[in-house]
Image 1 (cartoon, rainbow, N blue to C red):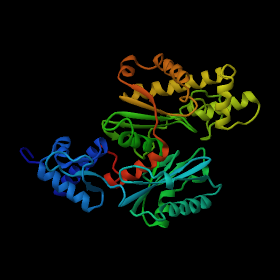
Image 2 (cartoon, rainbow, N blue to C red):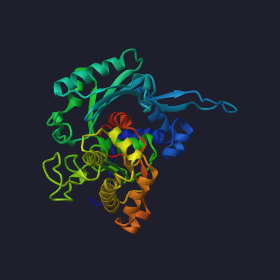
Image 3 (cartoon, rainbow, N blue to C red):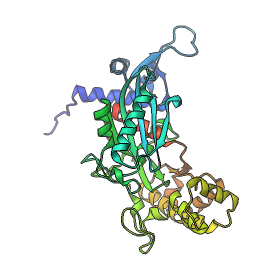
Image 4 (cartoon, rainbow, N blue to C red):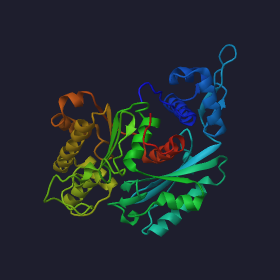
Amino acid sequence: MAGRRLRIEPTLLRRINERRLIEAIQKHGPQSRATLRRLAGMTAPTVSKAVDSLITRGLLEELDPIRPAVGRPGKLVRMVHRSAVVLGVLIDVDTCTVVVAGLDGRIDETRTCRFATPVTYAGLIDAIERRCREALDGVAGAPQGVGVVVNALVNERTGEILCCVNLPILDQRNPANDLEDRLGIRGRLIKGTTALCLSERSHGEARGHDDIAVLDITTGLGLGVISGGVIITGHSGMAGEIGHITVAPDGVRCGCGNRGCLETLATDAALVRMIGSRLGRKVTLDQARIALTEDPERFAPDVGVVSEHVAIAIAAVVNLFNPTTLFIHSTLLTDDADRFAACIERVRQRALTGSLADCTIVRSRTPKEQAAISAIIHEITHGGTAAVR
């Protein structure tokens, strides 16, 4: 109807204001209420009401400034560090990790636990539950949730892992739900690349950036994208699976069942496999790293093949999503500066010049354990919504 005013419900407006404050603190760190007014573009009464509400809900806390200013300085507002904690669980092919952190994202390294991934799903959940309870033993803060990160195809509509190529015991499962039932705190299942995006934006080098991408090329090849401040998830949360684009129809069989998927040629795992084939025996990641260091010329052809296909993946991301920063999460390909630089040079030959000029490609330095923490903090502070700004 012409002239009709849009009505914004008070509850929705309050949530929007609270989210803006939380994101300002996550981006800039502890701030006074006066500074938050400027950063969030809100009035003093609105900031005061939102801060008080978030303190009551146990998400924020106030503390005295470290260096008192002249006069009567205002207290600083920050995410809760000790009175509330979250658990992060990283499930990987060989190793699982459990970490504990405050809502500010700072991990308590003294409580970090790593253990070999059990061979059965029942054994996995039992082991994670036990380690979570051990990690929480003696913690002063109340546990608020557990974030579970997996490198798998996660269907958010059905709430389960559709397919985990490298760890099939997770297929058609939701370990976050099972841990929620056992621990009595909310659980959040999230795929690794989405979690890495959240981590880079809230605790990494991309704080406050609205157009970023993370390409994980460790055991598989996954993509996470935040575009215009929104996480790109697709209809069922399965967007970003560029690793299963066929690039060599007669190539190595992928765990998904097809042959020649990009992730069979463009990952650390692919390079480890090639090095092992050249040596005539199966090798671990660490053994492959040593082999590359001791005899780089011998394995130069393998590095070239992987670098070429990684460059194809990177160029595709740059051309499709036009991010300001693209983070590459890797070990073998990025731990050597010359090796990484050579890969980026190949990208210049394949990406659109204009899109590449707008994009900075860097090595991700955010650990996946931090990503698990960021995932559950996002669930708690944003209600699991896809928008992050």
